[in-house]
Length: 246
Image (tube, rainbow, N blue to C red; front, side, top):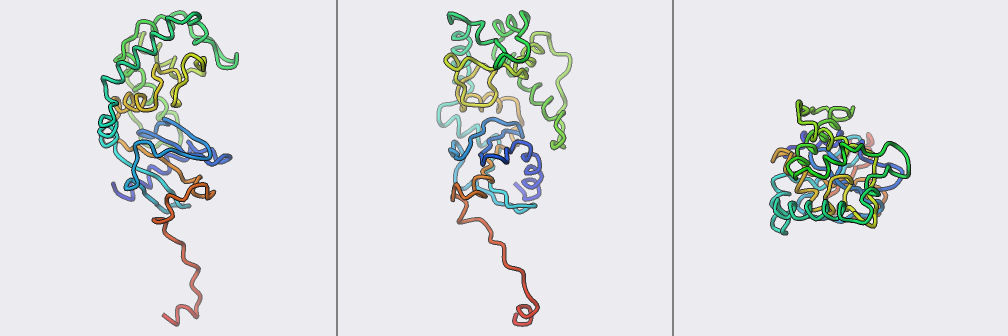
């Protein structure tokens, strides 16, 4: 992975950063998977994945390919089969609960509720349907964001049920926490764990796509010190006398 490639992706990560609160950001193929404030967990990244690059500032990240992340997840027992099990359990939990309609209520009472057609699509959708919807949703996000210069073709002419699922993923609706406690940011995808949600995203991105854990703001605020041994130090400006002594 070249420095030029990494530098290019740094620009794409800026829009994920909340500069008000030092945070860590996990992205897969430039799409946000998880954000944590004031601290971070290395998750499936390792010390040897650390990268420090100077752009307009010092960027501190862990960077691996989608293929590497997929292998590490599989080694820990998280693969397509595990995703299938978790997906089925989540759908069952939603629709077998005493009040499944609570899942589809709008977040804090704002915004529209899901339509009857969307709820029915949710009820009947297979995991492959959801993965198609996730792929389209991620392409739409990239297409519409000014910082992302790489554009993926948006899947066209998908069945109505898939477009209904895209609308669900893209909605501002939020699961009832007692029912569905997701560990990731894609709250309306029926999958609880960070690991299985990553498996789902890896199903729809290229093997060479970059997976990044960006901890720059935590390092900048000296909340973590895990990059101290590899961060290049900026040298003081050289004076004319100094140059004469060289």
